[in-house]
Image (cartoon, rainbow, N blue to C red; front, top):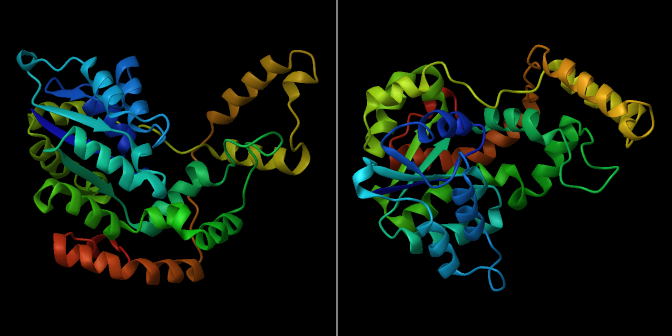
Length: 306
C-alpha cells in the first residue's frame, strides 16, 4: 500500500481535503484527520516529547490498531494533520519519526502565496491570543502588533514556517526528490478539476470519485464581521470579564449571542500595507525562485514573491 504524509500547510484547504476526500473516498485509509479515537491516539504518539514520553514501539502499537486490510480496497493510507508542520522546532523531528515508520512514504505539501497566507492566518487565528491564562486568553491582537511580533520572532512564528523552500529541501533530503509532491492552493481555487486530477494521481485513487467528494465543499470558513467586532468590543470595554459567572442566565445569553454573531457576513479580508508586502516579498523571493527553478512550480502565475 502507498503511504502519503500530508503535513499541511494551514489555510490551504486542508480541512476541506481532510473532511471531503480523505475521510470519504473509498480507496483512502485515513491515519490522521478526520479524527477517530485510533487515528488521534496514533498521531498523539508521534508528537510525544523526545527523550521522555516518546517511544517508537508505542507509535507502532497505536498504528496497528488502525485497520489496514489488503482486501478492503484501500490503495493509499494518508496521514494528514497540519499540526505536524506548525512548530518549526519540531518539523524535522516529526519528519524523522515518520520516515522511520514509513521508509517508502511520500510527502504532499500544499502551499499558498505567502502574503495571502499571512493575511488569512491572521484572520483565522493570529488576531486572537490562544492557550494563555486568564484574562489574556482570547484577547484581540491588532494586525500591526501581530506582524511585528512575527517578524521579530521569525524562526518561531508563522512567517518562518511559510519560507517553503527550506522545508521542501528538508523533506527531499529525508524522503527523496521524487517522493515530495507540491500542490498550489491557488490551483484548487481556480482550476479545481485539474487540481483534483493531480491529487488523485499522487494518491493513486479514482479521480471521478474524488471529484464527487469535493463538489462544492468548503470547510473552515473565516469568522463573521460580527464575531471580529464583538471580540474587539470585549477587549476594549470588558477585557477578562466572563458574563456567564456574573449575571443571571449568563451562560444561556452567551450561547445566544455567539450564535447571532456567527451568522453574520464573513469578515472583510485584511490586506497588508505596501510596507509589509515589500518586506515580506524581499524575504521570500529567493526561496520561491529556487522552487520555480528546481520544482517547476508556476508561482509567478499567482503573484508569489519572486
